[in-house]
Amino acid sequence: MRTHNKHVLMCTGPRCSGNNTEAFLQLGQKIDARPRLKVKRTRSHCFAVCKNGPILVVYPEGVWYSCSNEAVLERIVSEHLENDAEVSEHIFHRLGSGDV
Image (tube, rainbow, N blue to C red; front, side, top):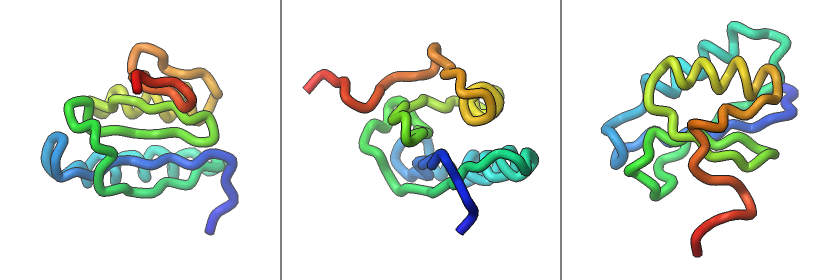
């Protein structure tokens, strides 16, 4: 396992918007293109918030993103994963908060 200081989990469907395997592969390419980035990525089947999918969760921060297209994915990788700056307009949930 590679050394990492962040763990990214991504829903790969199939309920939210079909099979999100392509987005998961794009995430891997973007992470691998930055060799100094210490991020582990894991695919998940479903986070049960399908209306916002595909979903990308960053830990240890516990930030949940609605990752609607490749441009949003690029921003999350470059701004949050690389520079520790959250992409607030695409966050829809955060660890420790909720409506339940």
